[in-house]
Image (cartoon, rainbow, N blue to C red):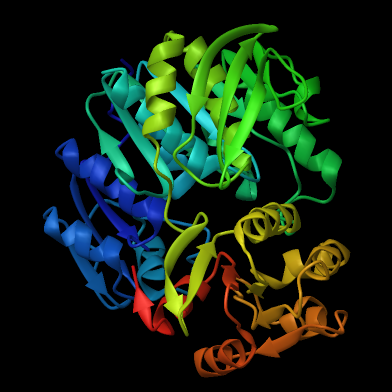
Amino acid sequence: MISENLIPAQCYFVGIGGVSMSALALLLHDRGIRVRGSDLTESDFTESLRQRGISVHIGESEEITEEAVVYTGAVGFRNPQLAAAQQAGKRLIPRAELLGMVANTFPRVLAVAGCHGKTSTTSILAHIFENGNRAYTCHIGGEDLDFGNYKKTGEEFFVTEACEFQRSFLSLHSEISLILNTDRDHTDCYSDDQDVAKAYALFAAQSKRAVVNADDRNARKIPHSLSFGRNSGDITAGRVYSDGEKYRFTVFEKSVPTVDIRLAITGEIHIQNALASYAAARLMGFSANEIKRGIEAFRGVKRRFEQVGTLGGIPVVCDYAHHPKEIETTLKTAERICRGTVRLVFQPHTYTRTRDLMEDFVSVLKKAENPIVYKTYAAREAFDGAGSAYSLVSRIPEASYVQSPEQLKKRLLAEIERDDLILILGAGDIYSIANGILDRSI
């Protein structure tokens, strides 16, 4: 195992309540490293950290005494804590760099990359390692319904999401890189599709072996050890059957039927995620039956087609979908199980993504009946009218714009009818907004 000397003995996390940051904080804490941190708001993550003995300050006023400060791209140097730490000459470590340092301390690393499906696939892999009784640590960029965002049984294997935002996944050097797709999502970081493809190729080149999606026109060109896909690849699915949008299928290894799998999670997209997990686990030395047990144990991830409750007696489903392809896939899933009308609510995430993919957003939202668009979640960005939610709505005659929870609830209650389904999509604060307007939660 590579020395851990590069990781400081004391770390302060600015933005510790983030899903990835809180998982990394727990990982370091479990290794005996002193960890504290701050965040702007309380959350389930901050409370969970406190329960594990990690001090969390709400606000930006706490003095940092630790030798190193970890931060994310979402935290700029206008943050007073980060600015003071920089002025004091403390060691500043971007989140992606810390993740790479942590990964280097494990003998075997499996890194999962792609615009769509990272969290679900990483969670499926965690269940495969769990059911295979391997000594593993898993860093998840979301919340698995069983494991949350962090799970540890040992330190032989490290399974992690590898995010392409700001090319942060290039901090990882893994035994296996798993590439789910290469769609352009972060338009503020990549100039075009070719720029994205080059980044994924470099990410794969930093691993010993790559597993790629043979259905993705860029991924399949990357030198690889194994491929998967619905339509092509070494690992494919056949004999596919559905029961209320829960699928069962046979895995074929190079055209040879190997094992039958029954998914416990709703959505056809999980066939693809299961195939990706299967291929990567095979390279890691798992048997077909070990993989089957792990995949079938996966119950889902929060904000991934999650039924959160009801409004006016109508079921409300939330999903993290914020890219046009994700919206299209999730809408199709909802329409297959809904006996009435799918009432789509979408919150755009960042002005640049909305502006640069405007035609694609318009095209997919027009497929919904009278879609509702909630005001943009700006995240790290300044206002840009060309990429605003209002600009998006102006291109869709049937769409309506709302900018408050009260307006959203009033509009939905005026439109919903028996047998409808409310589908609320987005990667911003729309999840908490949706939960706040329910008449019954689950």
